[in-house]
Length: 269
Ligand code: 1HE
Image (cartoon, rainbow, N blue to C red):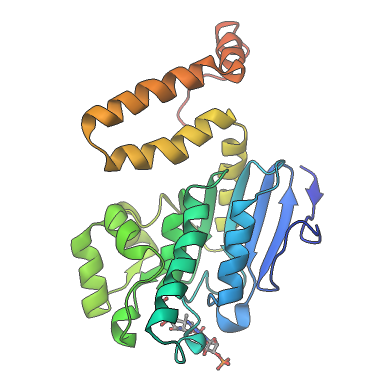
């Protein structure tokens, strides 16, 4: 796999708190403010929005991870104190825009989680499509103890991942979950040893990048919407998406490859 950095590409306007590296079809986006535990300030949120709104065409999957000992300490609390109510709403809406671009953007995003995945950091992780947790990862919503509330879409995404009752408990009592405990509850799809999250995330992203783009699009855009709409509309959407995917030349080539015994079988890994 070749390594090509696109961080200096003038078309990609990233703040110093975000670093982009490209390895083949994978973009590795790193939260790079370890001295502040990758707390998300306004510049970082805008950078996330800009990047995911216009992912370069040759990037087919993104791996998101954090530099240092923690994935992300959530909202940069130092920016909070001076905000009035109107600015607070605008701030939350900016987070919504950024994380909507992550979840409903152009390519699947695999998050590699370690250390603190808390507050807005957990909200960001929840917007990603696949979550790999190193054993050091832990999840918390310190908003409760800080006198604030979720603002980055967490009140919508987290109940769908782990259940409303659990989110209420985390907010009210400050309960934290570790990686092993959290995985079967929906916090992550995979748990791996310390230090191997990025490698596992890369391996998964590589597989994702090898899929037909239409399949990735359908998984990202249709599945979450079908989970929210009524059964009849969901089934119709499925039929439409299924026909569109089948009609794509890429699907026809892949099906021919299988029938001609050129494609790998579905085996247990
Ligand atoms: C920060 C932040 C931050 C660290 N905003 N500066 N999030 C929180 O309530 C979590 C707050 N942070 C922590 O609980 C701890 O920092 C950690 C458990 C994540 C890491 O602990 P540790 O011992 O490794 O680091 P530290 O010594 O606490 O912090 C190192 C520096 O990062 C220190 O700054 P320094 O100038 O004194 O060196 C900290 O002040 C700074 N730092 N976390 C600003 N979050 C859209 S709404 C979302 C709402 C939320 O996300 S609320 C949850 C906020």
